[in-house]
Image (tube, rainbow, N blue to C red; front, side, top):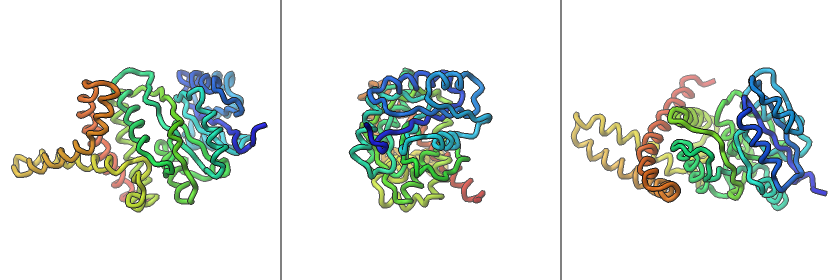
Length: 330
């Protein structure tokens, strides 16, 4: 008989998920660990999500209209019978031993309040932007310490009693807000670096640009709300899952372009552009080498330009987010 402290309820928020929900649930059912319940919360889907959920999940909660992923998570937690909740996104594939790893981890670490996993380097889509984004997330997460200040929405868990009042209006970076709230309460959030899952999301150039603008845009709001500048000085990972070198790259990329833009007026600015780009390259070289080792030289060369553009987009997103937060404070 398993202890109720090591059993858990799996909650999957789903919205128009007919293409990904079945493989997501099939992978969970193939797990070596069996003592769990699956709750799917349909968040106002207009496709076959509800029918699939009813045939594959233990419990299904249906929202008549879309209320957002945080509200869906909250609805699922209200009917969960176990004291620990594991949240998995609708487009995630767990490994056969993923749930066993969670069970073993909870058994060995009863004082842990929350945990999160990471993305595997594997991705079902072979296109460049899906591969790049997936490897980027894998690389960033591997640099994390054991105790962190955020959870990652693809797969994370927390004690049911901590499923309190969170900002249900956030469309993205809800996981960052949850983690920061837990950290500010002194709760223990642990990074399970052996808990790797596969993300089925396909990225195009435009979806990648949109994501890497909107996430920093909302990140800036969370940064101000939870006084992230204090964490930048005292935490190894900076704020949330953003290492300090990444934040520096996000500053250096637009500085380089600004120097180049005015170089015709002030030729000496060319030196400034060379210095800032050199520093950016120095800070980025380990990441670019990682990509090159994983996917080859051509991929690495493409990634040099894409990473610079990515840092530019992030910088614009952060700037717009700060301006919004300062001009329209609620």
